[in-house]
Image 1 (cartoon, one colour):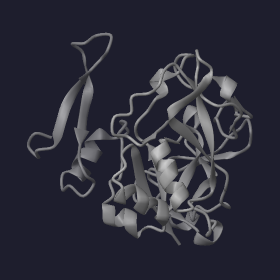
Image 2 (cartoon, one colour):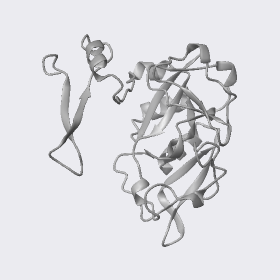
Image 3 (tube, helix red, strand yellow):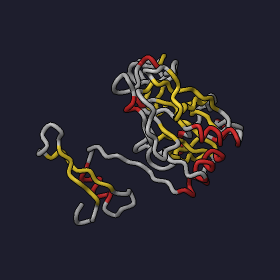
Length: 256
């Protein structure tokens, strides 16, 4: 790694801080050194992600949106969102859940310059006002409750997407080294791994054309991460970029 100037740093065990666990490194797959490094790593875990340019985001008819600023640390019940918020979730794969109650947090969040937040998708009243001005549709708003005072917080609202696409993943076009599908032995439903290499191909005919927010029919991730991805239209993408709103990541999809 040093000979090829690959950015890296050692990773030590938490319990034994002087014991080397491995290395964290960063390399693109088109780096000439990647094939040899991949060979030496073998089956060891590596994290893969695709970075997209603003042009690629603007050229995409639909984008997946993720909240990058999290308020999950403010949950009153400890780690993770408590089961009181969910119903119908598979105990093994996590697929199939639906939210049955507004989330509660301990205090008003400190957002800084962020206009979006997660783990579910939250946004500020400013964003909602702009969406209303442009008739952005396909969602409803749900409050987030300040736990001790039992009242809605002022700075954030939850976006509840009301539209859902048909099954859309173009199976013949997906890459197979990182992407996979698994049928749950408990609930029988299929969950898809998050698409991390390249652009997720979705069939255009399966997507609703006249809405600005819609959920994928497919579930991505498993366990606590299982969810429908939220798709936003080019109208929403342009509003986010033109207003320079922070706190959201936009991931283009390939409509085929």
